Each structure stands twice: as C-alpha cells, then as structure tokens.
Image (cartoon, rainbow, N blue to C red; front, side):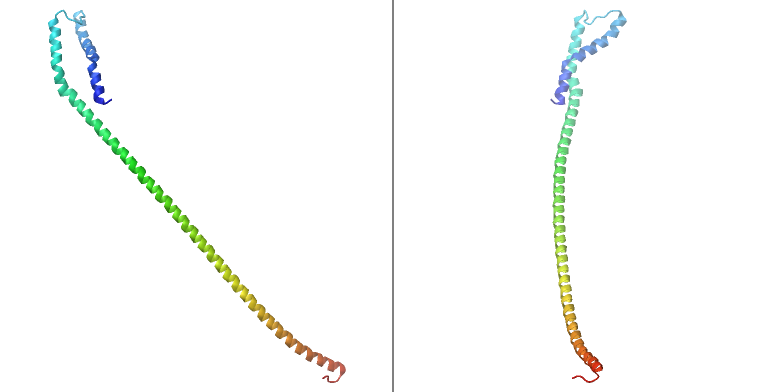
Length: 179
C-alpha cells in the first residue's frame, strides 16, 4: 500500500475531526456553564457543514494534494535510489567475482611457474651432479691408470735394481763376480 493511500485512508476516517471539534468546544461550553455538543439552532449546524464542505476542496487543493505530491516524489526518489543501490551492489558483486577469479588464476599461474622452475632447478641439479660424478669417475680412472703405470714402472725399476742389488750381494758374499 502506498503512502498516498494510507494518508487518504487516515484522513478519510474523520474520527480525528470529531474529536478535535469536541475538544475545542468543551472549554467554551464549560466557561458558559453548560455543555451542549449539538446546538438547538440547526441553522448553525447547517452553516458549519456547508462551510466545512466548501473548505474540503480548498484544503485538498492547497494542502493535501501538495503534501501527497511531495510524499510521492520522495517515494519515487527513494525507490530510484534503492534501484541504483541494488544495481551498484550487483555491479560490485560482479567486479568482486571477476577480481577473485583473476586472483585465483594468477595464483594458479604462479604455482605452475614455481613448479616449473623447481622442476627445472631439480633437473639442472641432477645434471650438474651427474656431470660432476662422471668427471670425478673419469679423474679417478685416470688417476688409477697413472697409478698403475707408475706402479708398473716402479716394479720394473725395482726388479732391475733388485737384480743388480742381488748380484752385488752375491758377489760380496761369494767374493767373486757372478754372471
């Protein structure tokens, strides 16, 4: 129910008008020593009713209609503001949803990039370790070959030296030259 209908319904009841008339008449009647709500002279009642009937359109045109117009305009403005607020809220929700989706996609992309970098670093680490192991094994093999060659040379020179030393020892012990 609109405000205008509520206002007309309240104004149309007329109960408040009767109460106001009674309240205004009571002090005057009390001062006169008598309280008569309905006068003996019906001419006064007729004049009051006709005056009231003549005032209704004037009061309606000058007071009630402008007030109702202002109330309707205010309701229209409030309804428009509510529609704009609801639209802004929907727009804000849409923007927030797009933002959250963008953040989620960015996080996923960052996670993929991080995993790719970690995998690449692990592969590089494995490759470097493998190369280092291969290089170490090559150096160890080279050192073993050199050691074996040195050992063979040392054995050969020791055999030659041992034979000569044995000959010299035999010559001293025997006291003659050995062939």
